[in-house]
Length: 486
Ligand code: GLN
Image 1 (spheres, rainbow, N blue to C red):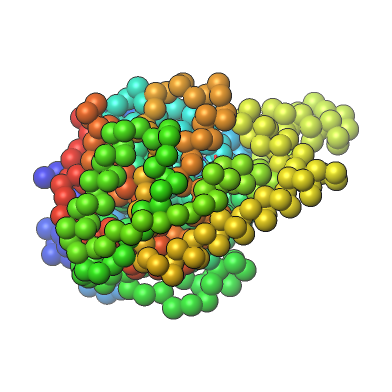
Image 2: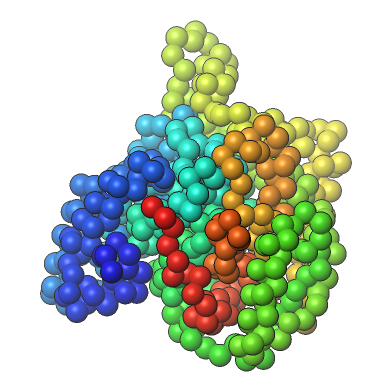
C-alpha cells in the first residue's frame, strides 16, 4: 500500500509508531498530485511550502510525543470557501481571485492547533452555487471514476481529491447537498453536521440559515475523527450551539440492532434511476441483516423542497453577496469615474452567470410586492418540511434515502438548463431546510461502474447515531475499498 492511499486513522497509527514521518506522508501526497492533478484538477491552490513547514512542525510534536492529536501530521484539503490567512481564498470567483483573508476560519484555527497539514484549497462551484463544480470561474474538476463526468458540487474538488488519494482527509461545506452529493458521485464519505454544530465563522456565506462545514473522507472513522476536531461552540458564530460534543469515534463500532430506519416513499417516486433505487434498497436490506428495522414512512412536503430551498437560498445569497462591491473586498473595476458605475462594473465583471441569476432572483423574491408571495410563503413551507422530520423522529431513529436520483452526469449535460440542475438536489436539500444532519456513504456501483451513495439522515445533534449506522454498514461491505482507475 502506498502512503497516499492511507486513511486518516491508518496514517495516524503509522505516524504514532514512527513507521512514517509527516514529511514523508506529505511528500507522498504532493507527488501523487503531480500524476493525478493533470487528470482531475481538484485543486485551485496547492500550498506546498506551507504543507512542508507544517509537516516539519508536526514531526517535532510526534518525535517529542507531546501534544499529539489524531490529526497531527495528517494532510488535509480545504474547500476554497473557508478562510485561510496564509492561502488565497477565492470561492472559485473572479471577484475574489486575489483575496488573502486577514484571519482564519474557526475550523482552520482548530486544525492548526491539532497539527494538520494544509495541502491546498479545492475547486468548487462559484460561491458554492451549483451541483457539479462546473460553475467554478477557474477550472472544471473531473470525476476520478469517469473523467467525462462531473464530480458533483459544490464541494467537487474536495470529493475528487479524496477519491483520487490526492489528500488524506478534506473539508467541504453543505448548504443544500454540497458535501453529500459529491461524496456520493465520487464514492467517498461526506457528513453534513447539524446546523449549529460546527462554527461558520470564516466560512464565506452563501445561505446563512443553511450553510454548514463538514468532513469529506475515505471512510466513516475518518469522518468521526475530523468531526472531533471541528465540532463545538464558538462565541464568534452566534448560531453555533453551546452543547457538549461527544467523542464521535466512540460511535463507530456500536451495535445497530433495533435501530429503526425510516424509508420515505416520497424519495422513491418517478425520476430515480432504477439502478440507483436497487442499490439503495439493497443497502437498506443489508442494514436490516445487521439488525436494523426498516419502517415505511411519509415525508409529505418533500415535493415542495426544491422551490422552497431555491427561494430561501437565493434570498439569502442576494443579501450576502451585496458586500462584494469593489470597495470592501476583492476585485474592483478600473477606469470608472463615479461610484455607481464602479459598483455595477465590478459586479458585472466579477460574478459568473449562475451567481448573477441567483442575486437577481433572490432580490426579486425579497422585493416589495413579492416578499409575501414568495419569500414568506417559502418560510412557511420550510416549517412544514421541518415538521415532517420532527414527526418522523417519533417513529424512527434514522431515515435512509438516495443522495441523488442518478449517478454522476456528463460534463456539460445540464449547464444550459438550470432547472434540471436544481432538480438533482431533490434528496439532499430538505434536511438543510430542517437543520438536521446527514451522511453519504458508498453503497455500490452501477453497471457502468459509476458510484452511488446512500444517505442517512438523523435528528439534530444525532451525528453519533448517523456514524454508528454508517460505520456498521460500511464495515459489512467492500464498496469503500474500491479505487478509481487513475
Ligand atoms: N446545489 C445546491 C445549490 O446550488 C446546493 C449547493 C450547496 O450545498 N452549497 O444551492
